[in-house]
Structure formats: C-alpha cells, structure tokens
Length: 174
Image 1 (cartoon, rainbow, N blue to C red):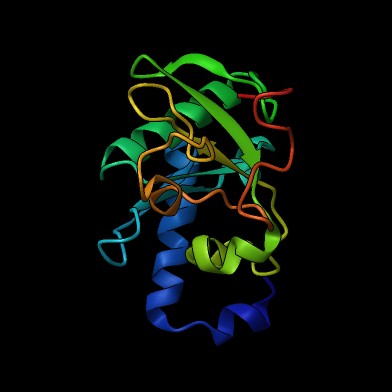
Image 2 (image 1 turned 60 degrees about the vertical axis):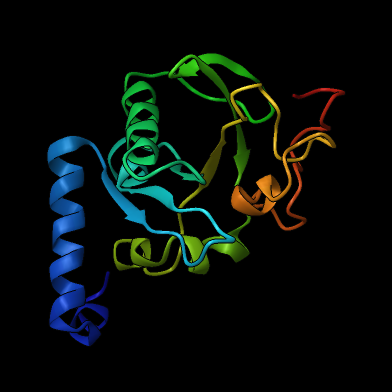
C-alpha cells in the first residue's frame, strides 16, 4: 500500500489493516468471519495474509457455522504453509471433521463482495483465492440435483457462473 493510499484510510481502517497484518505475521494468517446477511444466506470465513506470508491462495468457506469456517480455513493455511498444494476439482477425503472437501478458484469479480477487508492489505485485489466447498453430511455437493433445497444458495460457488468451472461435476470432479 502506498503512503498516499494509507493516508486515505480512516483510523478504523488503518487499525483493522494493522491487526490483519499482525495476526498474519503471528499466526500465519488472519481469519475474518462474517455472519449471514439473512436467513437465506450462509455465514462465511476467509483468510487474509496467506498469500503475503506463504505465497498460497487466500481461502474462503461459505455456509459453515461460526467457528467451523475459521477452523477449516486455518487448517488449509497450516497444511499449505507446510508445503501441501491443493488442486481444484480433486476430492480431498477426510480433510475436515471426517468430511471431504473440494477446492475451486474464486472469480475476481466476487472479491469485493466476499473479501472486503482483504483490500486493506491488497488494495488492488492482486491475490489468488480458492473456495473450500464442503458437502452435506451425506456427501451431497451444492450443485448435485439431489442437494437439499436452498443448499446451493446457502453455499454458493464463487465462480463467474456460480457453478464449478475448473472441472465437470461427475466427469472429472465430484
């Protein structure tokens, strides 16, 4: 961030930026948890600082209960910081609480809506991001035709099309 950009921040924005950077420096990443906007949408959690610290994409998970989303993105950063790399469309079995997950790239057009405070650290939005997608307990993914009603709305896929784009479900991905 340039001195001019820093000067344009409010005191609250500067304090939040300093906290995000301090948390990332101390813990490997800062985690931001955002409550659901209404009963039709899910809460979400995302990382800030994983790209800056470890050169790995920032991560977001949508639709998990408060606390669980933060635990999942922290687990991702811990594993990625240790050198593990995650490929979109691959099902990672037993990744989190006995459940598989799959990763998808986040469309940059969704960054302002879902990564707002990350722009305090990356003002130009120049960071990659992946979404960690979690199925139901019965391992049904949001895009599946038998997914529970509202599941795709509760856990939207943050691509341009709102569908998996890095793989074809049921063909070369879950």
